[in-house]
Image (cartoon, rainbow, N blue to C red; front, top):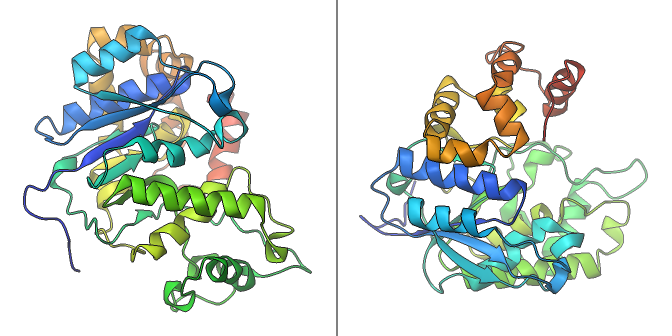
Length: 334
C-alpha cells in the first residue's frame, strides 16, 4: 500500500467543541491525546462556533473549559461561524469548521466522542489519498420496495457532481449490498487541506439538501447528510477505502466510542484502561464529574456493571441490540 506520509510530517488534529456534552468530551479527547502520545508535535485545534449565526444562541465554551484546554493540553481555540447548519443540523459543525482551519496544512478530524489510545503521530496517513472511518453500519440509504435501489441512489449523486461512479464500487460485494458502495462513518476523516476539503464538503452537502433529486425522494437526510456527502468528497480528491492501514484508527490508536455505555459494552480492555487512567487526575476529575454520564459510568462504577453484561467475543450483531439490552437494564445514558 502506498503511503503519502513523509517522515516526521506534521499534521493538525481538529475537533469541534461547544458548551454542554461536547465540552466534556473535548477535555477527555485532549487528555487522552496527551496521555497516549505525549510527544505529538502537531497542533491540537478546537474549533468553536461563535455566538449567533445558524445556532441563534451562544453555544461557546465556558471560560474555565477554554482555559483548561489551552493551558493543560496546549490546544488552540479557533472560532468559526455556523452559517448554514447550526441548530437545525449540528453535524454540520464539522463541515463549516474546516473552512476556518489553517490552509494547506494536513489535518485529521475527529468527533469529540473519541479516545486516543496510542501514538497518533506515528500513524502513516496518506494525506494525498483521503479516507474516513469504515466502522459503520448500513444506515443510509434505506431502499424502499417500489423506490430506487442502492445503485440508482448512489449513482445519481456521483452523476450530479461529475464523479466516476464505477471506480468507487467494491466489486467483491453483491450489487444489492450496501458495502458495495462507498460509505463511511464521519467520526474521523483526513485530507491534505482542510479549506479545500471543507468547501467541497459544504458545496456537496448544501446541494444535496437543496435538491435531493428523484432517486432520494424516499430517503431521509437527517441525521445522515454529512455521511451522504463525505464519500463523494473523498472520492473527488482521489481517496477511498482503506488508504490507511486497517486496525489503526478505530483500532490500536483511536476509539470512537459514541456513548459511554457503548464503550463499556463493546470496547477492548485497553480502551477501558486508557479511559480510567485519563480520568484519574484530580484536576480533570473535578471537571468531568460535572457531566452525569462520566460521573456515573466512570467514577461511580456503572460502566463496570454494563461491561459485565456482554461478552466482547460474542457481541450482538447490530448496535441497536446492544443499546436495547443496556436500556432494559436501566443503564443507558447519553
